[in-house]
Length: 263
Image (cartoon, rainbow, N blue to C red):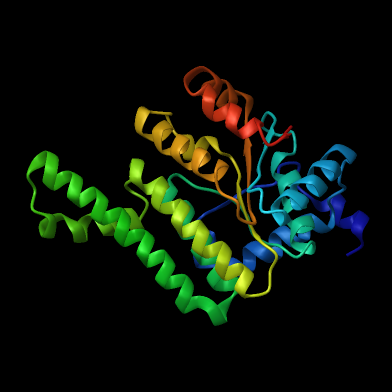
């Protein structure tokens, strides 16, 4: 199929894969996004953002980028183009996915890296398992301290719920940062210059923006801000989500904007 025919055959809206797709069929995600990327025409403003963003990752500035637009304005197509371009720049890039929790995000990162780096799957599994264990233990200790529920009685159930993405709490974001540190180091060990993670439809992760979610997000964004590793985070969100963050957690939005990759 010629490139013009491929463009003509495209749907007007590019769907986003859920995080579970990176576990169930990562090759399909790669091939589908690669097809969309082959028909993507990069706009000058996004080309400038992409070049500066890649440079910031390579300089270990741990940049955060965010694209804001209403539904149907090409956010997903743009971030797929960015995924493809960053991949050509020597970075290991987890493709854009939507997720409902930080545990689901950690699982998506693990699933993609295990697919992309099969020889290092044992090290990745150990790092992800440490994330799950430390998160579950933190919550089990909290339940024992606050509610008097014995630690051994709750740890297995909590870990299972975390693994399925049913639970999220403040300490999860701290443990996610530690997991990202290890995942980035493993990507470098495999010969990549750095690691990039892309969250599409950020409103799915934010949910109803309750206090716990905002606290976890604040810890995560501030934790990235003080790190100096070759890791980059790309997000997309709609204007309503941007307004919610501006009204309820303006400091988080300011920290995202600080890096200069906000469009």
